[in-house]
Image (cartoon, rainbow, N blue to C red; front, side):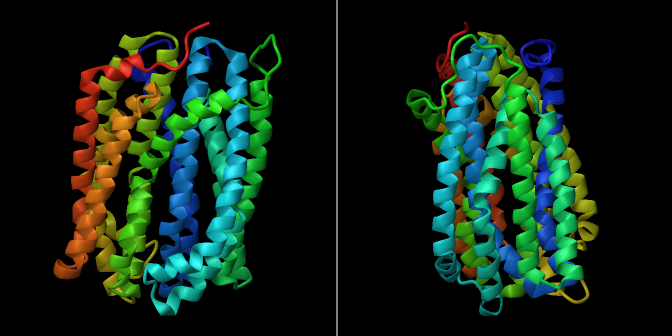
Length: 450
C-alpha cells in the first residue's frame, strides 16, 4: 500500500509538497487549456473576439468552479474511506458521486444554454461582441457534461492519492485543445465558433479516457462484498461537504460574474484588458488553490486514519510553501507583466486594453499570499468536513468584492474592481483562521478506521 498511503506516512511537508506538485502542474495545464481560446482569438482574430470570449469566461467559469468544488467536496468522503482502509465504501462513494454529477451537469447544461443570452444582456455586454459571446456559450454548454465529468474524475484521482494521473491527462488534453483551436481558427477561419467547438471536443476525449483509467485503477483495491452503484446516505453526507466546497471554489468566478457589469460599462477595450488580466490571475493563483486542495486531501486521509497531529504539522508546513509561491508570483507580476500580457494583446494597437490588464495584474500580484493562506486554512476545514464557518467566510469575501466593485468603480474608476480583491482574501483568511484555532474541526471526522 506504499503508493496508496503516501500521504499517511513520511515527513508531512515532503508528502504534501510531492502530492501538490502534480496538482499544481495539472491545474496550470487546465488554465492553459482555458486560456488557449483567448490567446488564439486575441492574436489571430482581434480585440473584439477576445472581448467576446472574455465576456463568456466569467459565466462559464462559474460552472467550472461548481464542477471543481463539487468534485473536491464529494471526494473528501472518498479520501477518508481510503485512509480508514474501507475500500468497499470508498468505491461506492466514487460511484455515487459520478452518477450524481452526471445528472447535475446535464441539467446545468440545459439551463445554461437557455439563459446565457439573458445573462449577457443583464451583464451589459457591449453590443459589438454580444452575438459572438452568445454563440461561444451555446456551443460551450453543449459540452458541459464532459467538463463536469472530467473535473469530478480528476478530484477522485487526487482523493485516492494519485495526482499524477490527472496531470498526464491534462497535458494530453491541453495539447489537443491548442492544436484543434489553431486548426479551427487559422486553417478553417472559424473564429469564436471554432475555438468553442475545439474546446468541447478536447473535453469529450479527456473525460472518456479519465473514466476508463479510473475504473481500472479502482480494481486494484481489494473488496470482499458487493460494491453498490449508489448510496443515498453517502450522497447526503457528501453533499453537506460539497455545497460549501462549491461555494468556496466559486467565489472568484461568481465575483467575476457579478462585477462584470461594472467592467462592461467602461467599454469593450477595457473589458478585453480586464479579461486578459483575469486569465493571467487565474494562472497565477493555481499554486495557491492547488496547495489548499492538497491540504484538504491530506487532512481527510489522515483524519480517517486517526493521525490528528500529522494534520496539524502539515498545515503549519504549508505556510512555507505558500510564502515561497507568493514571493515568486510577486516578482513575475512586477517585472514580467508586459511579455505575458503581450500573449493576448498588442500594446500598440490596443493601448487601453493593455494598460487595464497591466494595472489589474500588477496590483493583485502583490497579495497572492493572502489567497494562499485562506486556501490552506479552508483546506483543513474542508478535509475535516467542518464546512459551515468556512462557507460563511467565503461568502463574506464575495460580498466585499462585489460591493466595492459595483459601488466604487462607477465613481472612482475601474481600478476599484480589483482593489477589493486582497481585502476579501484577507478577511476570509481571518475568519477561517480564528475558527481553526478553536479546534472544533478536529471532532468532525466522518468515518472510522476499519
